[in-house]
Amino acid sequence: EIVLTQSPGTLSLSPGERATLSCRASESISSSYLVWYQQKPGQAPRLLVYAASSRATGIPDRFSGSGSGTDFTLTISRLEPEDFAVYYCQQYGSSPLTFGGGTKVEIK
Amino acid sequence: QVQLQESGPGLVKPSQTLSLTCTVSGASISGGGHYWSWIRQHPGKGLEWIGYIYYSGTTYYNPSLESRVTISVDTSENQFSLKLSSVTAADTAVYYCARDCCGSGDYFDYWGQGTLVTVSS
Image (cartoon, rainbow over all chains, first blue to last red; front, side, top):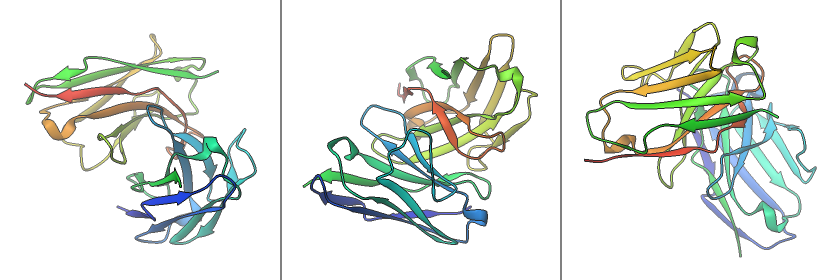
C-alpha cells in the first residue's frame, strides 16, 4: 500500500501568514490522484482539493494544491482564523485508499 | 443536500461484533454512481479506510481488516452497514460513513458526523 507522510506534524503560525503543508508518498501516485481534507475538532473531514490541484466546490481560493508523483503541497496563502485545524492528504491512485497522518495548523 | 448519519452501539465488548448502520438522505443508493464507504479514526490519530460497497452489493475492503469486515447494503431503506468481528481495544475509534465523489471509489465528498465506538468489557 502507498504510505503518505505529512510534514510538519504541527505548524505554528499567525493569522495572515502563509502555510505550506507537505505530503510525500512512498511511491508515485498515478494521475495525481491525491486530495486534501480539513478537519476541525469534533467534525468530519471536509474536502478541500482533489486531483492534487483542483479546489472543491465552495473552497476559498486562498487554498491551493500542487505537486505530482510523490511530492504534494497544500498552500494556504493567508491564514484566516477559521483555517486553524488539522489537514490530511489521501491518495486514490491505488488500493487500499490511504491517508497521511495529518498536519495540525495551530495559532502561534 | 446529501446527508449521512451513523447509528449503532457506542460500547462493544471485546471479542464481539461491532455493528453500525449509515442512513443516507438526499441521495439514493440504488441510483448508482457512487460507492459508499466506512472510514475510522482512532482517538487523536489519523484516518483509516475500512471498505466500500456499491448499490449492487459489490464490495472492496482494506486488506488489513478484510478478514473481519462485512459491509452490506439495504437499498429499500437507503442504508448500508458495517460489521467488524472479534473486536479488541484497538478497534476503539470514531467510525464515519462517507460517499465517494465520482463512482470510482476515489475520495469522499460527503461524510456522516461520525460515531464513537468504544471496545471495553
